[in-house]
Image (cartoon, rainbow, N blue to C red):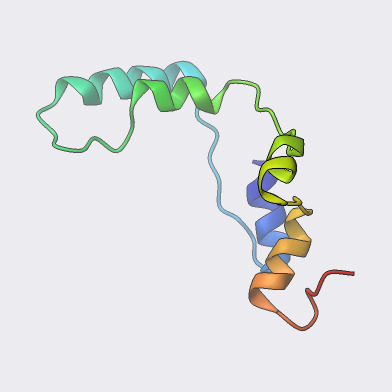
Length: 88
């Protein structure tokens, strides 16, 4: 939800969100798995990942590839407003 709010602020829009309990998402994913769908829109492992803690250490990416992470807004500026989003 924080990501959605930050993206909405960047694009000067108001997000439309609904809160869905994790248990309901998990139930929906299990039910979708029973249907004969070629590509279900939701998988149980996605729900698990959604509510799992996320690591954001980028040191190994920097050491291996020279990749330096930057704040979301700075990356969006560089992508959508290349002149104003230049690295400082």
